[in-house]
Length: 200
Figure 1: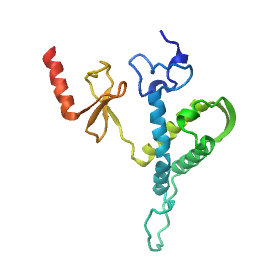
Figure 2: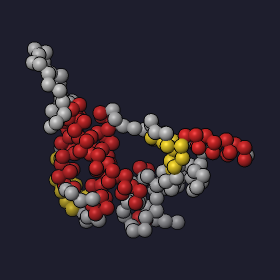
Figure 3: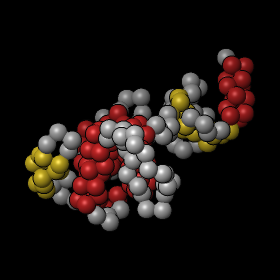
Figure 4: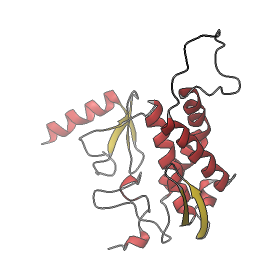
């Protein structure tokens, strides 16, 4: 049995988790390749998520927005949670720089002052901690703006790896396995379920 050092540090959030635990990793104390890819995608989309947050609280984003005539109605109060999240994302992106996630997770432990919504903290984090923070803040931004797409699990096991990891993003017509990456259409999934029932 593998020890925790050789399990993806995403834990329950691991993209390739099995029913027992997070995915196995060849190197200790790191992330699995599927989580690295997912967090890189979060990092690539974080700028757009930040722009959405700014629009959400009424900050004009360059090249976006509408011109409105002056009004005597006072502006709506600013959403402090969104404002604080924008600041957290800005601080995070400053710390991470232009590193790709696959390079970021190799960074050693360092002591840094990190500002969060509550207060400035002294944290001792390595690159994996920063990578996990990217995913965490990205998901918070999506949840706050209402753009979050939920993962809808399917009950049948995957036809290739036999694990109960099939699901689809809300609005998607593709059912996929979060463990091995197998994809099928909704119709193919329904036919597969019929075959499973007939086989019993």
